[in-house]
Length: 389
Image 1 (tube, rainbow, N blue to C red):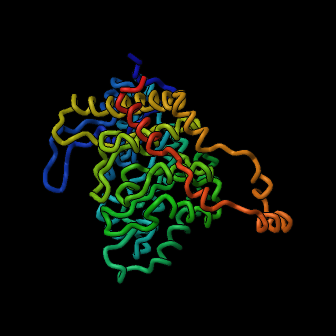
Image 2 (cartoon, rainbow, N blue to C red):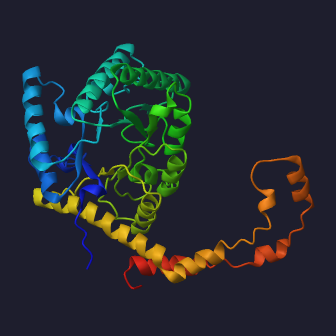
Image 3 (cartoon, rainbow, N blue to C red):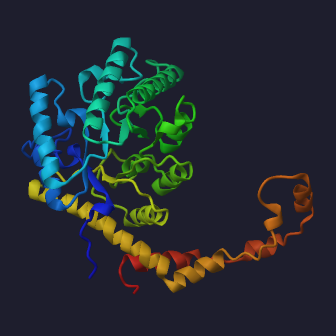
């Protein structure tokens, strides 16, 4: 049997808000006791995680005094030192406090927008203090319930202004930090601006410093919109913008479930892991998920171990797929190319276009060709179910 023990090179990370989630939902109160950030770091050290990420208020409560904040940071820093965990990513909570009920950077209230910038600059300082190299932005309140309330164009402009301002702040402070924007279609707002990874990629191209900004796609958020997550990740990768990734699972069309990675759609999870491993993605594999409300903290540990174990198993399955002789033979057959069409591809020129227009194609024969995708897909299923050796 293979060893699925997580290792530092796997770069598995969890947020304080994931293992620290107390099981609260809209219909029920907490089922698990509060644990301090330092205690959560030690829990993650116990299960073999590589790193821990945080929102500013996961670490420092929004109303903490300076002395309270320093005490928390001392305990957190000691826990990091004792466990060897690192902090690769940080972010700002711009959604929980009532001040952000109508958004942060897109709020109609200029004082709220200014406060959001202030809070984010302070949170960036905090993240950098603990070594974060990536800073994620999730605009959970940046949206509407009624489009009577806001101008969509003005909201885009305000979002751009905020990102440009914060990029300049990082440059001015000489921080080694890049931004990753996280899309979500809805919840908690009825509709959230820039709802998919594709929207975010288009938005980034309009910024003053697009080279500093990428995306942080999340499985659940794209599945909520009924989108193939791996395709979005591939688009981000091809654009050089996959700066971070959030792994979990989700039933399409439902509320944001944040299920344990691979627990709902193992096939989609397999294609995602295979893609990340095939392209040699070197960033964090961040699990933005929550354990079931039924669990105590031993169950939370089971959840965290399960996320990492499933990734490791699927990584092994991806290697098996890539080494399977029949699979590779089918792929070679499907992609067979005699090179006769190469003269027509690539950059346009008039001679090439003229030659292509005169080329004769046997359309009927091309349409009759079988592609063996059924067999290829069943081989994938056989590999995932463990019956193909």
